[in-house]
Length: 214
Image (cartoon, rainbow, N blue to C red; front, side):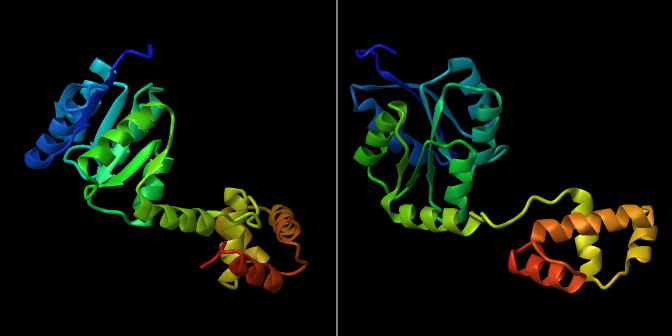
């Protein structure tokens, strides 16, 4: 996009009054060009594919497909459109999910017109824009999900871990999973190695400490 080109914007919002307010704000900015309006997520996705706007402003909660599903579909299709989420909900988990789904920005619907249009421009320039009231919450969510000490277990190792936590012995585990005693022993030893322990009780305790077992 050349320096003189306007940012092409599509908005998807179920509620007409709120949508009209954002539309007016976009039209008031000479840097922006409104190319489409959608009332639900499915319509938004179809219009984005057809019109290829620079920025799509999506409500998180919409009929048919929600904003997160639309964002995921755009990432899957390697679309160039950047996504700015607008929502009445600023729960940190929802914001985290939106960013993880590929959103470049997330604003509360309490944001004023200038904040919204400035965010559209910033997102188009490649910036990430988060509402001030959600920034600390997102950082906390990232920290809570970051688990550097959690080992990567295979699906079979997880099954064996859950069964020894239930008190099952190796022969019973073998019968339940249709595995030979030698194979069960191999899985157990792999579990011990990954958890840094040497027996069943310690494996269960360490797995609970690391959040691998409830």
